[in-house]
Amino acid sequence: MTVVPLVNENALFRQIAAGDEEAFREIYYHYYPKLYGFINSLTKVTATTEEILQETFTRLWEHRESVAGKGYSAPWLFRVASNLAYDHLKNSASRLRLYERIQREQAAPSSNNVTDHINERQHAGLLEEAIRQLPEQRQIIFRLSREEGLSHQEIADRLQISPNTVKNQMVKALKSVRSFMESASRILLTILW
Image 1 (cartoon, rainbow, N blue to C red):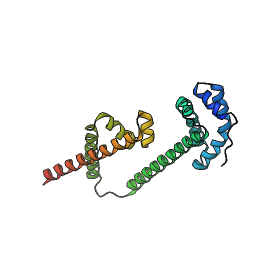
Image 2 (image 1 turned 135 degrees about the horizontal axis):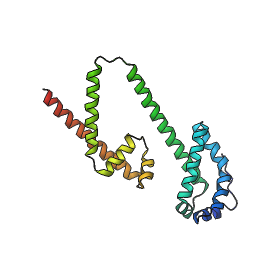
Image 3 (image 1 turned 90 degrees about the horizontal axis):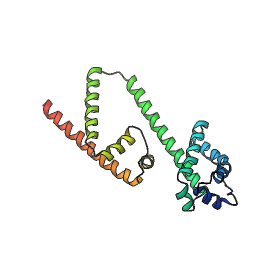
Image 4 (image 1 turned 45 degrees about the vertical axis):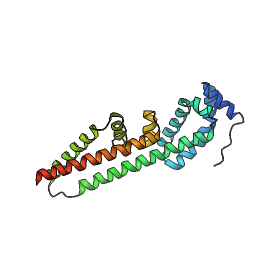
């Protein structure tokens, strides 16, 4: 897809950095149809495409000073739109896998529903305890990732930290939670013996 930039595009982005709403409107109306086609080719859903478009332009306005200051323009818009679309697709796939797993589990006959339910509650309680023992920021990052299904980039954006920090904190959190769960399992087995 060839995107023809505006003749005065660099000047418009500098004006946007200064808070010029008219320059923003000009960029918006020029790139909206091009971004729409690009995003819709990825998502195939009109409502999702429009939502991602709005988020893309919202991010341009919110980050206008750094975007224009670094000389970014149309490629930046397409990269943001692309990242948002891929994050949406990844989250949708994740939700679909979870839904399918739940459907399979509900359809599978259980030999002992009461025992299974008790085991699940014990496991959930241990997991919650493991999470509560994490340092506060690590706990927040873990919950955003595992409970809300956010990507590392989305968490970084929300918490205003680097994606690398998110990744490092998730590695440490998973290691701590795994270690806690293994220790708790060994203790439970010892008690049962």
